[in-house]
Length: 389
Ligand SMILES: [Zn+2]
Image (tube, rainbow, N blue to C red):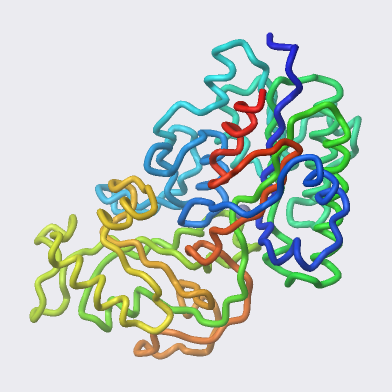
């Protein structure tokens, strides 16, 4: 094993929008920056947790690693599938390459679903949801995954793992329950940022090469657009996949700023979208639908799969016919589910008040390192540290 270099540690601080940092005191972050660098970089779009965590451990964009959202639509089976199995990964991760060359890789994450994704190539993995006994003995029982303290437990566990196992590479990923629920500068948000800051400070006090960044930002959302009803109003049929949809609905109620649309057959005889089997639409028609969707209030961008794949480095065969991205204030979801009171079938949008992510408006994230690095994308965090070794 390579024991001459210090351990490379990347922390993904889930949902740490730059606005949270700006509104809080972060003495440790500032101390780390003083010996290295701080700045902002870009995350992947859709700006979701798994998409970006996998991006960091794979060291590449979704077009290569294949995780394009939390949910995937299996067109043949006609059903939505949670994209939470490591088998959805389309490439080798950096961790597997580190392991191949004899390095010991460890990961401590908040959620179990992420543990399986990042676990490839790891000698040790732990999550706050299913913690290892010896970590619990050392740092205590993890608080509930939906509590504000879960992120701090992850950082404490990471510190203990660093001290007791001396891995060559350590990945740490926290949870975004607080930024989903509290605005920047609030008491709760500042307590969360303060806890992250202390945890980072403890890690940085060790002989490590550190980079902390985030998976995505977070914005207040005041409008919910029901894309199923929009399609119906436009005379189109199709499957709308809310990309944030996962098993952790407490955080976000499945309302996020990005959706993939799988066009089906037409319900309106005046237009010609889709083929007879409902297995896809042709290029010219999709472009026409994209134009129409971009005219809907709250929709910022509607891109054909080819255009979306090119612009955001996505995998064309996992993103349906269209990628639809909301404006800064808009989420996509079912009006019945989000309780706007807009229950008439003709209603296509309603008012909400929540905090969420998923669109290109939440792709800017902060980073800090105790080395002088220039990070353009969060997915390059490990590469940036490797270069410094
Ligand atoms: Zn997240």
